[in-house]
Amino acid sequence: MTAALAVSGITRHFFGVAALGGVEFAVPAGSITGLIGPNGAGKSTLLNVVSGLLKPDGGEVRFMGEAVTGAAPHRLAARGLTRTFQVARGFPKMSVFQHLMLYGPRQPGERLLQAPMWGAAARRREAELAERAWSIARRLRLSHVIDAPVTALSGGQKKLVEIGRTLMAEPRMILLDEPMAGVNPTLTAEIAAHLQALNAEGITLCLVEHDMALIRQLCGHVVVMAQGRTLVTGSFDEVVANTEVQEAYLGRRH
Amino acid sequence: MLSYLLFSITIGGVYALLALALNLAWGSAGLVNLGLAGFFGIGAYATALATGAGLPVALGLGIAMLAGVLAGLMVTGMTLRLRDDYLAIVTLGFGEVVRLVALNERWLTNGADGLSGIAAPGKAALGTAGFNWAWCIGVSLVVLLVALLLRRLDAGPFGRALRAVREDQELAAFAGKPVLRLKLQAFALSAAIAALAGALYAHYQSYISPDHFQPLITIYIFLAVTAGGLGRPLGAVLGAYAVVAFLEGTRFLAAEVPGIEPVQVAALREALVGLSLLLVLHLRPRGVLPERIPAAPKVSA
Image 1: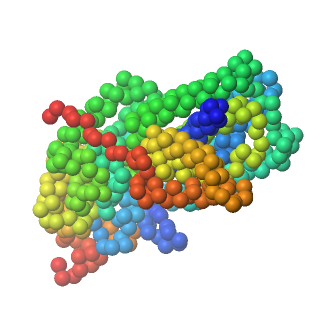
Image 2 (image 1 turned 120 degrees about the vertical axis):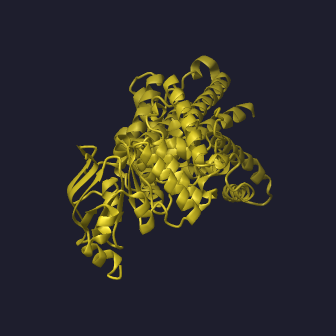
Image 3 (image 1 turned 30 degrees about the horizontal axis):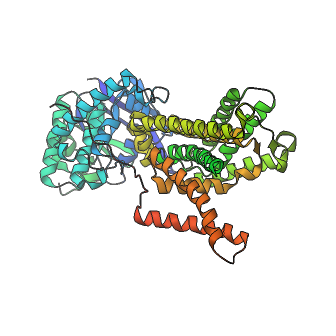
């Protein structure tokens, strides 16, 4: 089993407090891996380190076999690693369509010297991306709001835009930070179905989530973190059966 | 009267170039540049010194723009971690530094006396009237060219990436955009356009002094961009011409008010400028030509 993402010995301190104390974990290629743990376990910090937002104090991150420790977010994006945020973020004055187009990779028209000429290559790429953007918008049922600024959308639609633009980036792996936070049950099921469809297309997913039913439904592989370390990894059932996990996270009642 | 009108249109063109420069940095990329007058001054002095040393005017314009690019890269390089009000303060300081250097380094800039006798191409050959016509048309064409270029830049993928940096630079990085490179490019290009405006101004007036590069110019340009429509190159151009028309128009209007001193006339004009901005922003909060979200092109299903 090859790992899409392999994290070893990652440490990160905030003002002397260790948020991550040597995390070891791997996300198998092609899996949907769940990252769970109690509040303060270091899940968000880990996600921020892996996605390039924070530089670790020590340790190594490998993506698709290559060392990417401390690489800038746009370089990771170019390698096919993208992420979403717990609270859906967007560019307030840009439309849904512009969001989708923005995430399209390899647009030569973004280079200053090619931009004013609007060369044939840039126009061709723009047309390709526009076609993809429309098909993603239709798939996520966003085509009726495609010209609306994202600030005008409902919370659930913002989540869908986040997934849509991530898809535009042609990712090999997506890190999802609580994709279902604040989303109603109907939409949760819809998003879950989208995630499974993406995974079926070969995209590796790693999600931080608190909803255990959802983790059981989606994740073939689960990593439990507590106090800045990895506690256990395995299938959902294995992990839930582990007494350490029960103490740290699920409580003894379980 | 005609030559006064031509003069006003030419100066309006110089202001329009400055407004286009500001709109690129501030409107498109979100980089507040309160040091615009400094880049304007750098361009003016660069070409005045270069052509003073015997270089042709065309080369002087090129050197001015290059000096603007270098100054722009230097300022962005020093302020990479700054945004919004902090960037505004540092750039305001930069503009003042340029003016104070021009004022005090007499060996280079002739201090407060300024540089006179700057090459004014066409003045000898065309005579004063012909010169005024030629420069009015020439500067207007430069404005048109730069405005069209920036509009093209703005509407394409480059403009889209800049807007993303403006709205949320962290998220733009996750979208795969090289934020640092985009900021440097936007600011340097903006500085080059401001420097070009300064160079044209220097050759047109054939005299410059540190007094011409007061921070008040920057404020007028901010006013022009805000009233014209932040984020729209054509709005910035419109705003700049409107500001010059207004400044020149109130000159006559204020003189009609009986029983006030010339100093009070000047103060009254500036009060009117402020009042009109308030009025424009009350009626059109996002400017006369506000930024638009382009519609998605239709693609066959």
